[in-house]
Amino acid sequence: DKFPEDEVEPTGHKKGDIIHTVQVKARKIGKIIYECKKTEKFDNSYLEQIRQDKNRVTADYGVIVTWATKENNQNFWIDGDIIIVHPYGVLDIAAFLRETLLQMYSLKLSKAEFETKGRAIIGFMQSEQFRTRINNSVAKSREAYESLKKEITTHINVWHKRAEIYKTIHKNTNIIQNTVKYILLRGKVLENLPEIEELPP
Image (cartoon, rainbow, N blue to C red; front, side, top):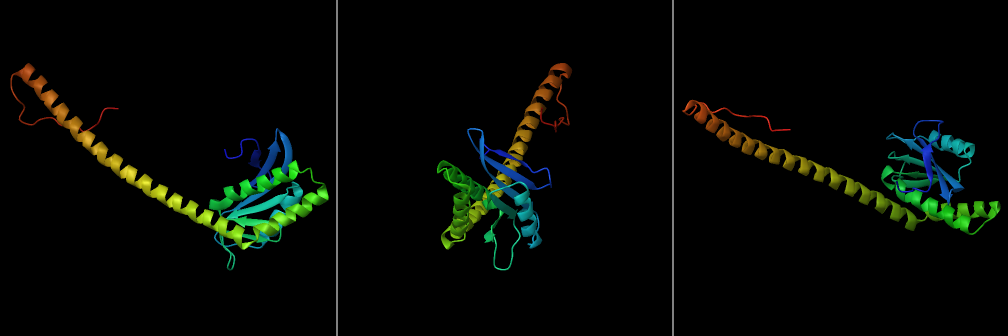
C-alpha cells in the first residue's frame, strides 16, 4: 500500500523473504531484499544467508527485519552492507532506501558511481543522527501500537456495556408489549411476566 508503483512480493525461495522492486513508470530501477526473522536471538548466520540471497536476486540493498537484539544493538544497526531493523521501523527504512534508488536513477550514474554512492548511503545510515531518527521512529511506532491496543480494549468494553443497556431496553419493551397482548386476549395480567433475553438480529 505504501509503494503502489513498485512490485513487492515473496522471493519464492523461502517463506518470509520479500523482494521489493522499485519502479519508475513501470521501469525497474533497483531492488531491496528483506528477510524476516521471527526470533528473539540474533544469529550471525542470518547475515551470510541474506548476502547470498542478495547476490542471487541482484538486489541493491539487503534488510533483515527482526526484533532480535545483538550485544548492544537493538531496533536498528548495520553489519557491513546489511541493514538490520525492528519491524516497527522497516517502512521508514524501505522509504529511505527507495528514495536513494530514485535519486541515483535520476542522476543517471554509471555502475561504478552507483556502487560508490550506495556505500556512501550505508555510511550515512551508520551515523548517530540517522540511528537516532530511526530509533525514535521505532519507539513512536511502538507507542502508537500500544495506544491503539488500549483504545480497542476501551471500545470493546464500552460496546459490551452499551449492548447490555440495549438488551435491558429491549427486554422491558417486549415485556410491556406482550403483557398488553395478553390482557387484550385473556382479560387479565400475567402473574409472571415473560422475559425476552435475545436481542433482534
